[in-house]
Length: 353
Image (cartoon, rainbow, N blue to C red):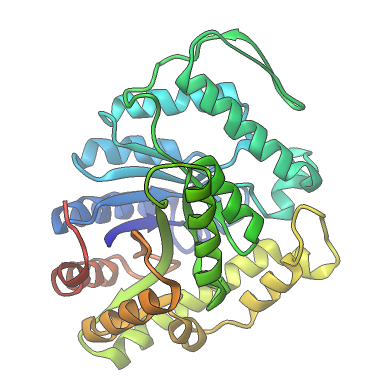
């Protein structure tokens, strides 16, 4: 298993400025590479304190590319629904060059009602826009003189520049949550998958569907899976939970606040069951998150036990992507946690760079 770090700003300006957040995150990125973590990734969201500091993850990754030399840089994830494929393809080629071919590109559909409303796009177009966007970006990166007439965007005889440094293009990940068809789509297309283990024991079945679809489509191997977790490591397990409680539960509050319209009557055929997903998040606590393995909070030994249990429950996953400085967790506490995990947990399970 490989371990990386994930950055997801979910703080209000009065809690932490964007300047402070990004300075802190770049220091964490540098330290993570020294410890042997293999990737870093950044989200794309807008307008709300849940993720809104990062409307363009590639800007952060370009900065991180100058502070690191070996880690993979991953968009976690860009949103084709809010971006023209010609623009995304060009930015991907540019960042792949700046990072000397260290970019992996994750795509997601978006799920926050306020973003759809403010961009003037219907959530009922989400899946169609998402798949068309990925298809067009893939063509633009792989081929020159591309013509593609989609439902939403028409491309005429266009060669995207810069051309990718990695050939034929950077690796693609797609985000999946709890819908079996999404996991099957990723496997069928030969894309790596990034997921959040909210589905509990169902994750074993979902990952099985993904790998089966991958093999059935004739791709080499059986796929590649990245799961995301909150992590706080401390030598005193009780103290770990005391320190992490407010930031972790603050993070849960922020996502429910940003996505709460799903539980208030907002609906879309492209998002079946999202009222239940958000309601479930609203009921989570640090105790339920650690019990399910969605959050790794505790001593190195406790976290190691959690990892062992998850691999037995979910099956194999190749990457764990860890949120280190979530919500208002202080920078020094996050760095101490990273170092303790990196020296005492990562060597037991991980391949380091």
